Length: 158
Image (cartoon, rainbow, N blue to C red; front, side, top):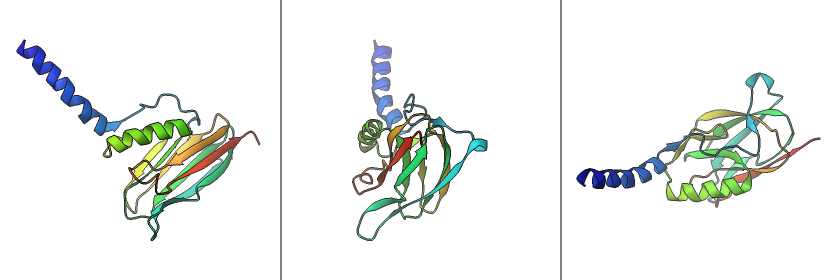
């Protein structure tokens, strides 16, 4: 009986710890496409992430157009003073993920469509856009999306 109670208690306590830690590959298939092959990059898009003096948080630029089938390197630099993220996904998934991040703000990502960068740091995401449509980029650190840190990637055949 003690073993069963102890097991139940550990399982209950472990769930929040795991949820607030990191997650890898937890999103399943990503509608925007798939990780790209670095040797097939046909365009590099440089993006800065930062806070503005009036309290906004922004990606510059925050609106992109790419071709379906194209492989893009996003070179992302955190020019702000806070940690920021770059997450690429369809809007519904971004909003779902945003809600989880609000509950577990220290969650870290190990997903091919996301990167979290400390102030002054840079990183790359190489992405192949296999589907057309409009997808979101967002910073899902709690409060950042609401302060304006999001944008759109429009993918079309032409």
